[in-house]
Amino acid sequence: MKPRYWKHLSQASSSDPKYVNALLEKHKDYADATLRKDARINIRLSSKDLRGLQKRAIEEGIPYQTLVASILHKYVEGRLRENG
Image (cartoon, rainbow, N blue to C red; front, side, top):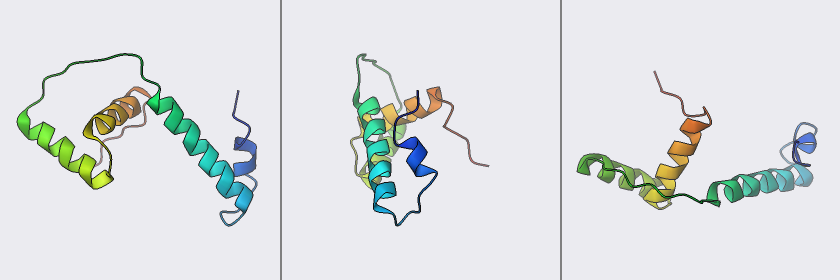
């Protein structure tokens, strides 16, 4: 079942307040789904990779664990694509 805001997004312009509110609601739903965590993992990484993840997380303004979880989620959902 599609959330109630989806039909509005296809019918509105980006300057329409209803569109903006629907977009905000959509992203809040994404955030809620991302924040729902019920499992833990423990992995080993090279120090170089960990520093790289931490650097990218700082650039994004988020904790590196959140970045790692986001990358894994996108991979599982088939939304992580290789450039090139």
